[in-house]
Length: 155
Ligand code: HEC
Image (cartoon, rainbow, N blue to C red; front, side, top):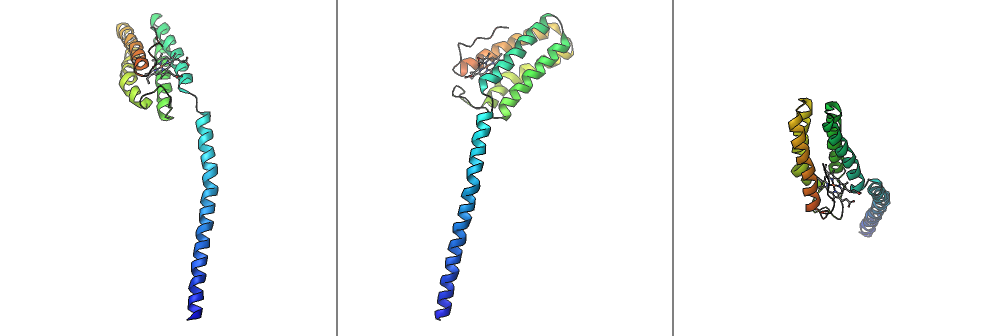
């Protein structure tokens, strides 16, 4: 009886110790994971940096449309799309954004970019011109909706 009792105390002790050890290992791993997450977040470009890229491609698109350079226009449309998709994929947050960027991508950018891509491939000047204006208006609507009304983009 004594043996059984001390044995079960022993087992309980071992189990408790094992639990402790497991906890220590888990904590040990969590620390580097947390610091890796912090590092990744630190290395992500900010929304403003992506916006500067988008602005560059937006302006180059305007110039390409004016020169009827359809290949360049198609390229710039694609670059705007890729940059905006990266903002959404990386889940770039910002103190001015009222919702995740992907909501605004769907609302303001996806459709005009798709129409512009079609217009560039058809070399449709009129559609390129009108939809470029719609795109610029949408940039400004999103700025308005996200505490950046003063950031006015011109076609
Ligand atoms: C989410 C909606 C949204 C859309 C769509 C959007 N922007 Fe922005 N934009 C922002 C926000 C928010 C900021 C402020 C970023 C910051 O705080 O650094 C910004 C900032 C900017 C800036 C200033 C960047 C800087 O660091 O000086 C430019 C330029 C800009 N946007 C251009 C554009 C253009 C061009 C388009 C359209 C093709 C566009 N944006 C579409 C939300 C948007």
